[in-house]
Image 1 (cartoon, rainbow, N blue to C red):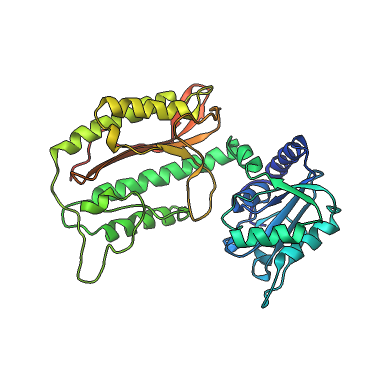
Image 2 (cartoon, helix red, strand yellow):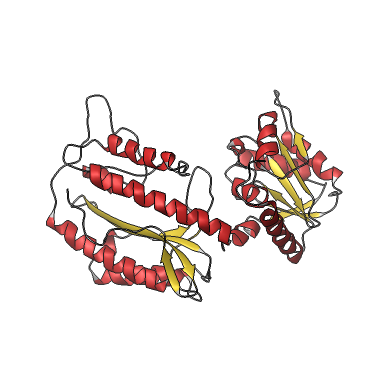
Length: 363
């Protein structure tokens, strides 16, 4: 097997999940989030773009219903022994195959939690599952059961996170070196990606936003850097107002990192961010969220929950990992600024695993 974590650690995660299942008064859990499947079993695939579902019983029973294309993926990357295959065919209803699998585990008439909030379980597929299980068992939304377990990272997970931080810093150093007047963003992007992959890292679960000029106002990836007849390049112009924006972001980032302490809440972090940037005169240019927790996530997003926004009640604890970003966007002046870092929460406060510059980088 090609596991990133020991079978002992994976078994411990499943035991904790089973205790949480029982505490919710459930008999089992239907998993559709690829993150949950990976966390509990090591199962690593992009096959969630098609239908698949995993069952974890309160008694520790474990089974996967997936396509033939993912059979070997399950065998090689996970500890799952019982893999059922639904057959690709015209008019296939794999929800019924899932029900047959559940029936073999005595789930008829039982109460099952379902991860409805999953990118692999589209609305159409969700309706198919509900129809297949109607009258067979009772179901309820349990989308957050495993997510909450994933919030606090194990020592093994933190080792990966620290290594990921080193690769991110290395990619940033490459970007800073190559960002000179006349440089093409696509070239910078490619060299950053090369640094990650050559360091035995993986592409992130979402594509990085990168742009110059007006495109620097975009906080999402967009295509078209090298459009025919339109070569976007980095300019050498620096607006003095950028320095004021940078200082405000730096002050807000410092204050928010100080708020990353056990016992504080996610809402406290956002309140700190909003207070500093409002005081600096940027109330109308900041975003309504300033970060999120991080972990092993799959496309289409690297953003895990909880998001950092106003009044979020999640209490911070040692072992949680948060990315906090200070982003200012001024559509009138077409100026932007972004400064962010990822930190592990410890008993003593925030341990940075990426390191944002504390001064503007000029080439």
